Length: 222
Ligand SMILES: *Cc1c(COP(=O)(O)O)cnc(C)c1O
Image (cartoon, rainbow, N blue to C red; front, top):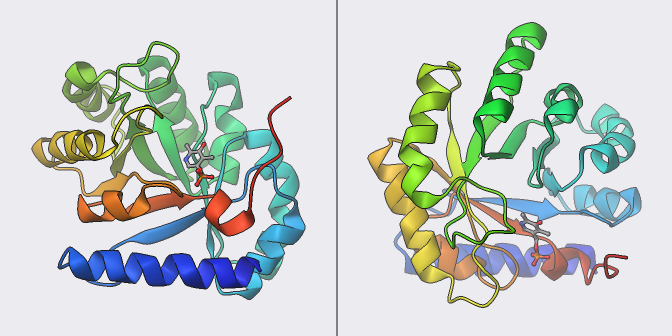
C-alpha cells in the first residue's frame, strides 16, 4: 500500500513538473513519516524511497539509526521546530534542517557545525502568512535574517521553507517564498504537502513534503 501510494505521488510529481516545463529530476520527494512506526519507513525504503522527513528530533533518533546501517544513502530532513538545546542531536541525526528561523538558533547551529564538522543542508523557514502561533521569520524580515545567517554566523543557506496557513489558497505563499529565494540567491524551495504539492511544483518547489498521502492518516495529536 505504501509502495502504491509512493508510485502514485511520484507519477503526479512527474506530471506536474512536465506541465511546468521542468526537468523530471528537478524536485525531491520527502516522505514525511512522523508518528508512523519504523516498519512504515522500511516499507518505503523497499519501494526505493530514500528521503524522509520527521518533525521531532527524539522520534528520529529512535527510528533511524538502525535503518541507516542498512541504507547508508538514507537522507533525513528535520521539518519541525528545533530548540537550541537539541541542536547537537539534530546536527548528528539529520542531513537537512528546514526550520532555521531565529538568530539564537543560527548561532547554536554554527557552533555545532564547527565543533562536529558535520554540515546539514540548511533551510530558513519563512512564516509567509505572518501567523502569530507559527514558527518562521516574518517575510519582511527574511532578507535581514538570511544576511545575518551568512554574515554573522557564516552559515551557508541552501533553501527556504514555508507552511501556508491552512485556510488560505497556497499559491500566493509559494510565489512569495520563490521571490524571497530569488532575490537572496537561494536555490532550494521546500514547499507543498499532500494537498498542494502540485501547486508548489508549478511555482518552483525543489522539495515537497508529503506525509498522509503516502503513509495514511496520522493518529490525532493527544
Ligand atoms: C506533517 C508535515 C508535512 C506533511 O503533511 P501531509 O499533509 O501529511 O502531507 C509537511 N510539512 C510539515 C512541516 C509537516 O509538519
